[in-house]
Amino acid sequence: MPQTITEKIFSDHVGRKVKAGEIIRSNIDMVIGNDITTPISIKAFEDSGMKELANPDGFSIVMDHFIPAKDIASANQAKISRDFAYKHNLKHFFDEKDMGIEHALLPEKGLVVPGDVIIGADSHTCTHGALGAFSTGMGSTDISFALITGGNWFKVPEAIKVVFSGKPGELIYGKDLILEVIRQLGVDGALYKTLEFTGDTIVHLSMDDRFSLCNMAIEAGAKNGIIAVDDTTREFLADKNLAREPKEFYSDADAHYVQTIHVDVEKLEPVIAYPSLPSNGKPLSQAVKDEVAVDQVFIGSCTNGRLEDLRIAAKILKDRKVARKTRLIITPATQKISLQAQKEGLVDIFIEAGAVFSNPTCGACLGGYMGILGKDEVCISTTNRNFIGRMGDRSSKIYLANSAIAAASAVTGKISDPREL
Image (tube, rainbow, N blue to C red; front, side, top):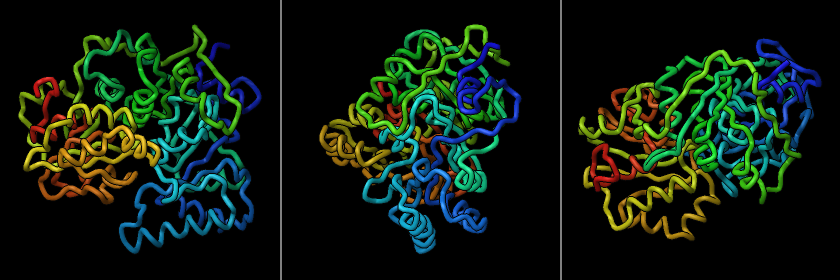
């Protein structure tokens, strides 16, 4: 029976060949919680009467949404996770001392390994598929079940094959590729399916691009996004103290896909997702023509807060200033990225340009803090969602773009093509 990567990963965990559509019980290699969702899981766990975690080394808590605490409520919520982590002596507890956005921090720490089954109480857990793992978001009570049993139930997803062809041109990054896929599929076109990213373009994509690509699979409704392991993956993992032995799986040539999408990357313009859906993608040339003025620019998040994004932004911002009526907020995804950005002089460039450079946090992305939008304000953002009210007031508008477009727009005060600066 020919299989996709996802079917093979589940087969390995179940101990027999499985196929799409089956309901299976699988053990889980890593469960991820954060300061918003974990308290709900903790309550369910404790209400069950359980005293010990089924797999304590397979549970990570990352304090990344409202840390340092933005108010009393977030401080008290964070305390629940902290107390639980200390009570159970969690090995993988990441607080202010070693902080980062969960979907950037865990791969950095070697806690995501090819062939894993990973769940997290955050929809963008699908990011980790960039390392050849099955990774998906689940609800907080599903997380508690995994904490109690070490596993969970899954319906093995059918797969959509996305074939990228050609070498990416100037200003084309992983963000543009996934925005184009979402434009074609819509926000529910891949509902409960695997988005398997393939094609000769993949070899040209850095790991940062691949994380960005898989991160937004959920924006098309997908259960998971995944990319097969190659030399780029192995190089990324080479200096990590990996939590487990990697297992590389590859789809069979005659594996079944319910749909195949082709994207000619060489013909692709940078994609801008207009309000208020990630699927509302338009070419950069259209956005430039529309002369969209922006009040705020945000560069960061689990989608585009990585070192490569900061380097791209710095190259554009060097010796330039943020437009008078525009705010620029730059948020690194982890402390390690922040330190490296300082060593390379990127932070000096940002601050001299007039940007705010913050601690690692999810805050602005979900309209939590560190960049909330006011009435009728417009933001161009490197984040993953532009729903109504996502980053603040319900009358505000969000445009999604890659880091280069965002940085150029901060300089001009309107959505702009960096090549025209």
